[in-house]
Amino acid sequence: AQLVESGGGVVQAGGSLRLSCAASGFTFGGYNIGWFRQAPGKDLEGVSCIGDIDGGAYYADTVKGRLTISRDTAKNSVYLQMSGLRPEDTGVYYCAASSVWLPRGYIDSADFCRQRPQPSEYDYWGQGIQVTVSS
Image (cartoon, rainbow, N blue to C red; front, side, top):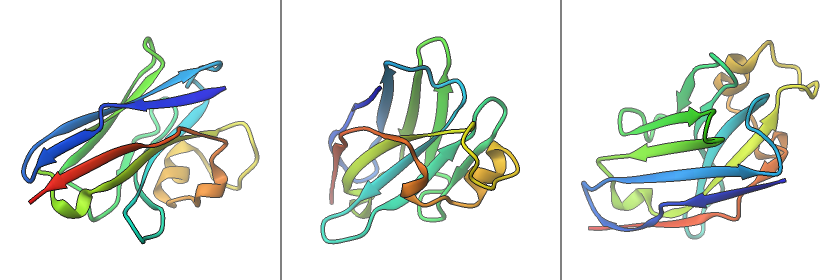
């Protein structure tokens, strides 16, 4: 099982990027998907989460209104559309998948994303992709 991110790069402030996360070796059905980022010298930050079917989408306050997460079941992929990018959005972005079938104490997928789960509650991770926003 593997996750692969793509779509990163260098963009000027105010610009847009769309990150993709593709799964191989398993299907995203039955998984909640999160996007995390890590800026130089900072901790890993959860920026967005999308629940399994009809689970809804959630965003960190720092990105709300500028990022949109979506999933395409047919393509077994999850996307993070980023617009209005700022220099502080610079970092390595990771996608991660958390199985809904493991007992984690959440009511449903929406509750999982709403509670901003820790990175340790995700089962699979991508290798990360760099996003650099220049001022």
